[in-house]
Length: 101
Image (cartoon, rainbow, N blue to C red; front, side, top):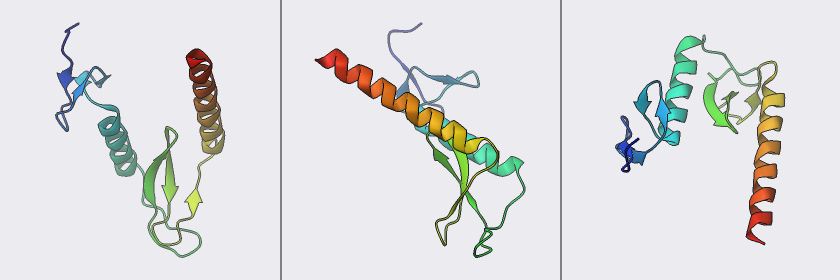
């Protein structure tokens, strides 16, 4: 392992993270995953206003969101995954706060 972090293949920022065998920072990895999800699924229409839903990342889960009404539409299991991720973030924050005291 190098003492100096490699540059992200997408944005050029220094990172120690690897994604698909390439140095890739977290924000770029998230954008790549959203793009892959959008390309692999059929476009869905919003049940409220029929606009084409866009993919967004919410606590590590790719969700569908309407750009017009801002409604959020979840696939089976996504709400549970978001809840689990939020709970994990709360526990990490509590542990960090305790470590500071």
